[in-house]
Image 1 (cartoon, rainbow, N blue to C red):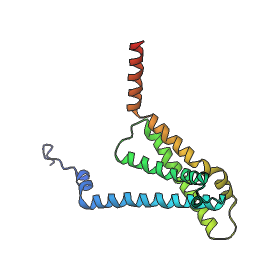
Image 2 (tube, rainbow, N blue to C red):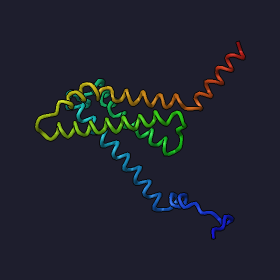
Image 3 (cartoon, one colour):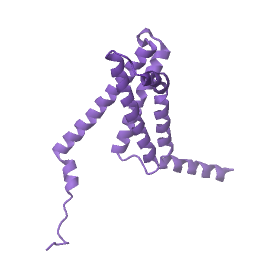
Image 4 (cartoon, rainbow, N blue to C red):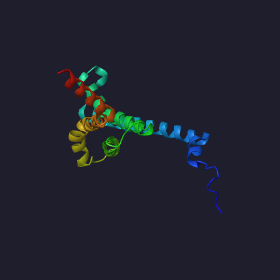
Length: 171
């Protein structure tokens, strides 16, 4: 009934290499980039509004504060690209997922906060708490997780081992 010697066809490989698959993948990456820019824009907007920051005046602290909140999206996009290029290894993946999860949570709270602030009415209490306490450290949290992902790179561990062996042989 079935010929085990018949030539096997990799349908999933063919589908991913097709023109439509490539177009859909490219559009997906473009949409992810636009989403990251949009969520960064909301984070910057609520930070500027809440803290009365004026980066146009050359205020370095204001510029750094805005860069800090936008870095959450930068780290999230870098992790997504690392997943897509299969750069992440076993020990890195759980921490990389934490970066992605943190980005989803932070982006969602930023969007809710931004819409609450821009559309009038009573601002929910959690928005003030988020903008005062959560948003300023969001970049630090995601950046710290990204650093751990990089430290868990097996190539970095091998380089450390080689360096320690070299030091041991020279001493």
